[in-house]
Length: 463
Ligand SMILES: [Ca+2]
Ligand SMILES: [Ca+2]
Image (cartoon, rainbow, N blue to C red; front, side):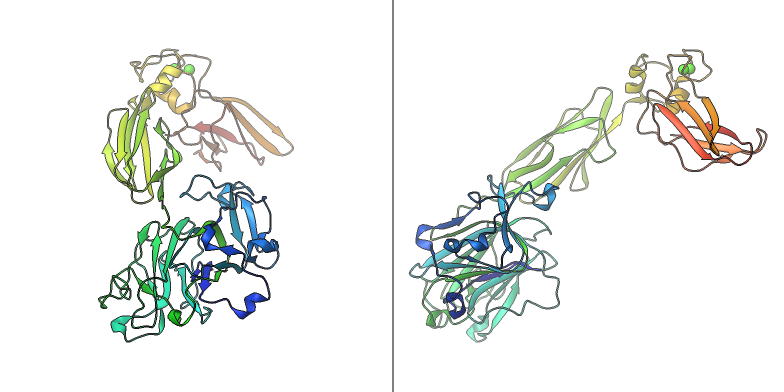
């Protein structure tokens, strides 16, 4: 059996112990004991290619156990989503081998998690050992591609690669791959035996796979003929090869059918730049395949839910808050985004009026503090509509070391408004034009530019 996640991780096992493998280690892993590598018992940073009793073979520092939290950012080592306990995973930095003895077992499952790199070379990998029984890799479309013997009409017995159309695995996603090597079922015309592959729990199907061992050829089944002349060899796996680089975890070799729990990631978010409420739960939410997941969107006081999108498609506009959405029978990764809008009068947000000490019903066109600016204008200028001393004006100018400085003050800033614009002119009667880059709103705003001649400045606030 041999599998590949390129740039690639190839996980492979071959029918017989290769002569070359004798020189670098003896088989110490027996399937009879349901061999498991979760890597949780190892030390962070440990090179397991140096532990002879594990039967992992690789150049030094090639197969290193790393913490999912190391190094930062953790995104470099994301935790697999399919299992609960994943503090440590295997970082495969070069080809590695594991020696396994499964001789005498009629059905052997190799169950594992990989974060594959996609094979971006022209054509299929061509370095598959001649005695490999099975191999796989992922192509640039996110499809698994399986190496097996062709059985079309039972006439073509050359090895081939089959693209598995579904499911598609997103780049950088973890995927659970379970390969069942069936050494017990009847050999087809005495030439070869079969295997099945589950991708995140779903059996892979292909035109060149048959519906059952020994069945008449119809195609579009889930049983792939093993590559190589498996019947002529002792039934079993001796070697698993991981080719290329990638992340790998929870490798189990067992005679039991794996208990596969597939989970999907639903990312629940208030998109960047949006504000005004909450979505619960939020962030990356793991949902067991086929189960339901409820999200609650709630607007803050003085805010309204504008819309909720699932996978970029709006599922509701201005629903009452709180709004509850239950994703039914989740079968794939998804996103849910909540957008909010501020309750307002003529564009002046009610939350801003309340923050300013006014009421939700305050007239935006009134000037309660008598500073000459309406409340709507003070909103635009980020000044206090309830304080006559707070108004839109330059508070200080000075010149130093060949630089002109212009300063003004803000408070009660609505973050959705644009930056301030500073305009300049040679004389107050000339046309003012933008003086350069805008100034983001802060408590104290200072504009500078190289002093040339005498210059007049004015401030502008925009929505
Ligand atoms: Ca005013
Ligand atoms: Ca004022």
